[in-house]
Structures are given as structure tokens and as C-alpha cells.
Image (cartoon, rainbow, N blue to C red; front, top):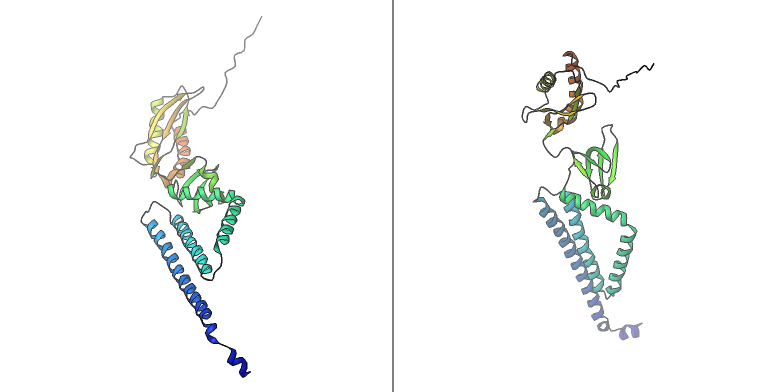
Length: 275
């Protein structure tokens, strides 16, 4: 035992122990510094996005997360490098894995790209009524992959963003004031000035129809069996459907009260008697 102790020379192991201790301390320092820098990068990207009210917070949270994880990836590689691990093969492996994941998730990536474009250009926002991808409803949520809508019959519809971005988008809530287009027909034997007066009175009495801009009421077409009026009252965007579904009934009742005929399609048959 004494001979073993005498033969043991601590000095020959001391440099290796110091080197390992130094590497461990440096790795911890790099790790802590990397975590701090990644957190600061996330906050910097998010704070930059907060300056632009037109852009959505979700977009900059996503960019901030990308910046944070990219920094943490380099931190992880640096820590391994401190212990002599060959990181070249690891970087190549990460690149190959990223390519394989990207090919496997092509649909998800297209939704992600469309989501980024929607959040940058913002053709619609939450609580707005839109028509997109063959659906109509109120937008309740927008994320990087999907848009969630609520229909009038209280259904929840989840639409992939790629289906929305590649097609026409109609935003019914974009403008504060909207025109409501409607068409009404009266018989040819009726006085069109009297019919216009009845329609004007209904629109003037409606509480949701705006005085300015003034409602538009004009003859639009001489149809087969009727003289058609195009009627366009203006209202606030939130009242659009209330006006659209209340005015026709009121005009019908007013025309009936004024004894103005609303015609329906009919045919005139002439019988010829031959000798």
C-alpha cells in the first residue's frame, strides 16, 4: 500500500484535471451566456414588432422563437466543441434531419409560409367578417398555420392558411361604412316616381340607415315583367346584415300599403281559332 502511494504522482494527473475543470466551467459559462443572449434576442425581435401596430404579435413571437433556438443551437455546438467532440458531423446530421423534416412536412410548410404572409399584410383581423376559401364567417383566431372562423349558425371552421392566401379574400368589415345593394321591381303600369318615394320614405325612417352618404335609389333595368330599382342604403359595417335582412320586408309592406304592384313572372297566351 505504501509502495502504491509512493508510486502515485498527482502531478501527472493534475493538468488533465485542470483542463477538464476549465472546460466544464467554460461550458457552463457559454451555456448561461447563450441562454441570456437568446432571451435578449427574443425580446429584441418582439419589441421591434411592437413598434408596428399594423403587424401581428404572433408573427414576431415566431421570429423571436426562431432567433432564440438558432442561438441555442450554436451554443450547444460550442459546448460540445469544448469537450473535443467533432461538431462537423453533428452539423451535417442536423442539416440532413432538417431537410428530411422539411420534405415530410411540405403541406405544413406551405401553411406556415401563407400564415407569415397573412400576418405581414393582414388582409383581415380577428373579429372581422370575411369570405375566403368558400367560407363566410367571423374570424376568431389567426395563427401561423390556420385561420379559425365562426359562422352565423355557430359552427367553428378551421381553414389551412395556404387555402386562403392562394384565393380571393373578401373582407366585409374593412370599411367602417358599407353600402347594401338590393333590387326591387314594380309593375310597368305603376308610377315609378311614386314607387321611388315609398322606398325613400322607408330608408329615411330606418334607424340604422345613414343620412350621409345618402341612399341611392334609381331605375336599373327594364326587365321582362318589371321595372327594377337598384337600392343602396349605407350603414355602419356592424349593422350590414341587420339592414340587409330588415329593409326588404319593410319596403314590401310599404309598397303593398301604397297599392303599388310588385309583379311576378307571367306569360301572356294568345289563342287563335282557325276555321
